Length: 285
Image (tube, rainbow, N blue to C red; front, side):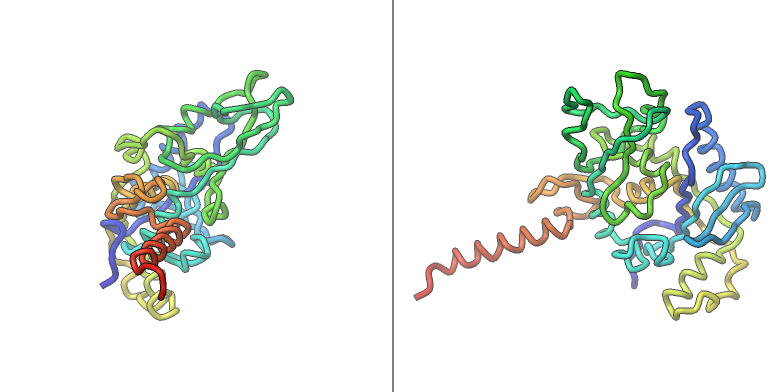
C-alpha cells in the first residue's frame, strides 16, 4: 500500500499575482474561501494553461494556479520540481524545509521589509541568503508596505528545486524566518470540502497508474473529500507537521523523522559512520 502524506486528497491554490495595494491583500484570502466553497457546487471556472490548471470563482478576479494531489502526494509531473518525479514525498518536504531563501534588489515602490545584519555605506547587501527554518506568522501582511529612503528594496525567493514552482505570492507568504507559523497561520490557509467532482484527481491517478488520464473517467462525476491549501508553503508545512532539529546538522526535521533527510546531511552521516567503523576495526595488519 502506498503511504499517504495527507489525510485527504489535496488542492494547492497558488495566487498568481500579489495585489499592489496592501489594502487588497484580504481579497486573496476571500477569493480562496469562495473557490473552496464553490467546489461543492461546481462553481469554479477551470482553464487549462501551458503550466497546468488555472481556476477562478465567477465573482472574483483573483486567479489561482491549481494543483490537485492525491493523498500519497502524486500529481502531474509538470506541477512540481523535476526531482519529485510527479510525487511530493516526505523526503521532498524535508528538502524544502532545509532550503535557503535569497534576497535581491528591486526597484523602489511597494514591497516587504526584512532586517539585514549588515548593509555597507554604498547600500550594497553583504549578506543575502538565510537558512530556512519556519514561516513568519503572516509575512505578506506584516512586511508589505511602501518603501522610503530608510529601507533597502528587496525581492525574496526560495532557492533550490522549488524556485521554479513558487508564484510571487508564495515567495512572499512562505518566507522562512525565525517565527513559528502555528495553527493560526496554517488555519487561514487551509480549508476542507467535499468537491462535487473528482475529475482531476482521477486523471492524476490514471496517468500514474497506466499513463492514461482517462482510465478512470467513469469516476469523474463522483464526489471526493479535499483539503485545499492557499499556496504551496501551507501544503508543505502541513505535511511536515510538528518539526524538530536534526541532531547531525541542525536543519529542520519533519514529523516522524529524527534526521532531516537532506542529501548533504545523509552523505555526511554515512561518511562519519564509515570513519567510525574503520576506527573500530583498528589498523590493518
